[in-house]
Image: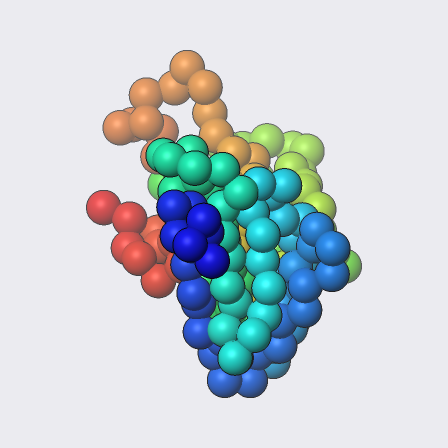
Length: 183
């Protein structure tokens, strides 16, 4: 135990209604909003005891501290996701041409973007729910990375390169990331 004191360690209390299972090199967290699974970094040792996740770095110094800090954030985000969910909101802006956005059958379709005749489509990631209500799009998932990647995919889908964004403001833009407003 004295030797472990030189290594960086963290204790994370497990939230009520959340189950944590560590099998080999993977951690699975289940809750009312779903289930999230990740492979743990090989330099981190994790175990569940006393209703808490204990992790310790297998390397010393700054690198061990950085690895444990990163995994501390990952586990906390996973717990928050299965308990409350991660929500991203986007805004549909169309000043030149009235564009329509629909989400159904596992696809998001943007019609009449900048007067285009062909609709733009992207698939909705598995484990993500997308709702289009008027000019607002809400993306929700238990996995923070999936929700963020889906929001980015929508924003990139309507990106116009070599156009002045001050004039051509048409597109879909992220307005809040997991409850934090974008300035």
